[in-house]
Length: 161
Image (cartoon, rainbow, N blue to C red; front, side, top):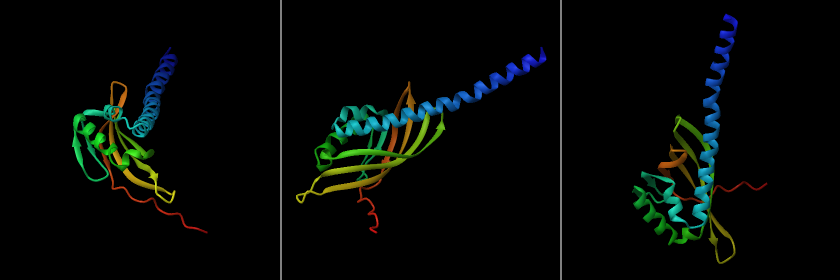
């Protein structure tokens, strides 16, 4: 009887300790999906979808250092950005690291890559920027509560052989 109780206790311990790891893996996938949805919304010039990815009191610091607080201000910013040459760009997002500060709060960093419209000579103007974001899980939806991105810059050139 004591052995059964000990075995049951061990099984319960394993189940309880493995659940957070499984939940964290699901959260990692959900965060990556949110970053993919962000890129899709950018590429569709959908400021409404982009704005919905922020918490109501979210903070946004853009490529040019402009700071906006709250969804309405962030929405206005995206509308403005899409009226500039950046509005014709194609965005991809690469997550470099992900750290869970709490089960429902994550620190994400990575790189935004913007493929700008063609120059008159047919070449494409590419830009990159680093980003850091704090994301929170709001009822199963991972949202940005703070996003900071560095200045746009030309990507590093690969050495030719």
